[in-house]
Length: 128
Image (cartoon, rainbow, N blue to C red; front, side, top):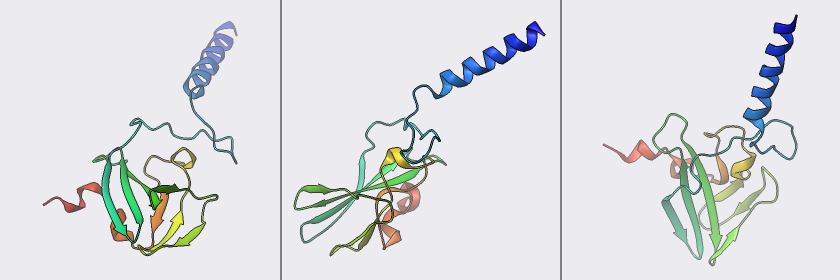
């Protein structure tokens, strides 16, 4: 009996420690993924008439690679208000996928996602 209680306490402590540093999504108690790279580099940029879409890679080159789109208009970052919001730009129609901290998985797309999906291809797509 004492072994069972000790084992249960250790298991509870391990679980609490594992999730202590995780952020949670606003609409759920599910822990959001903590990204290992604090600021992924801008890998691609698409520009037209004062609009710029930067495509960043999260966990670049791994099986868990994800993409994050950052949109600027005349030098000012444009941020969506809710997931699924769309805006038309000279670049493409863009859909807001949410902040990086709101996605369920590292590989889930976040930020602005263009209608032209070729722009969000994996980092290794251009390699020979």
